[in-house]
Image (cartoon, rainbow, N blue to C red; front, side, top):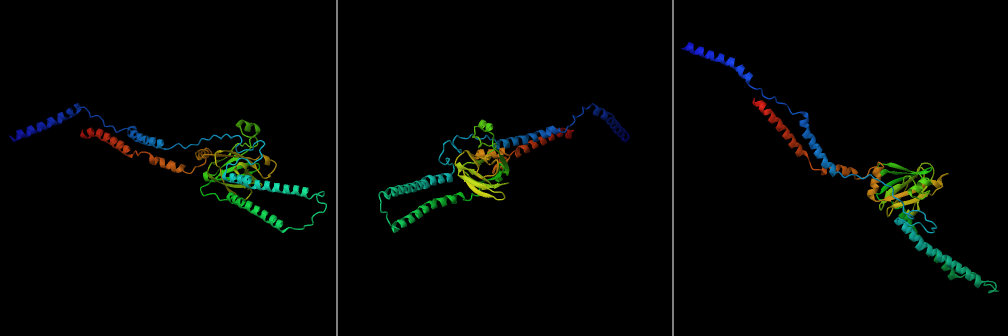
Length: 357
């Protein structure tokens, strides 16, 4: 019985060894597990930064760098035919100086001139030889001498007070936040540097008559590149020269200051309204002294900033705006994390059947 049982077990084992390879050969192979391709892995990740960048770009404001030269206004900031007075003033100092001239000095001058003329006529008529065969022998008159001493003193004091006030205001220092323009005189053109805006320089030369007429500007005053400044804001103008003494003068802005080699002169200017204002070098500086015109273009602050960018300069606040724009964009990190989790889940689901087999 034991021998028969052992023989039966041995036969069963032999049968299993023979039939197992045949069963394995007939079983269809499991589909190969393929790892996700790099494109499939990176596509969601690439889509996430793109989706993240789009709101950031939309949140970043476009910085305006367009500039079109302003057309001058006839009679504004330039000489006029048959003019007998100062040019119309477009700065507070200019208006104050014009008031001092027309309302204080001119009436005093006219009154004194008429008084002296009347006295001369009266003396010539009253004390002529025909009317006075025996001339007066009076040598002095105390009352008259006191009057003609005190009255001129009072007149000079009355003129001195507003004059000194105007002089003090002209050289009042510019505030710390004023726009700085360095004006350099060359033989025979001007250079304008902007230290607060990247320290770029604009070189200004006079246009010929044909080009000035084409642009609609006055001949011998028009230039190829103007000194552009913001209107309604204090401007710190620093003048110097590279060769000989020049003088930077713009009559309609009540501004005149010498440009001396090796020396820096400083003065504040505030232009009341946008416009184009013309001037000339007012110091004899050589053969082409009469061909050094000045053109100042005052623009609103936004347009001035755009002009600075167009020249390759920098504007205070642009860096802050550029840095704040990404922070204002909606965060895309959770979306990226979700995409990564989905990719990992897909890979795990693909690997599960292989692990089971």
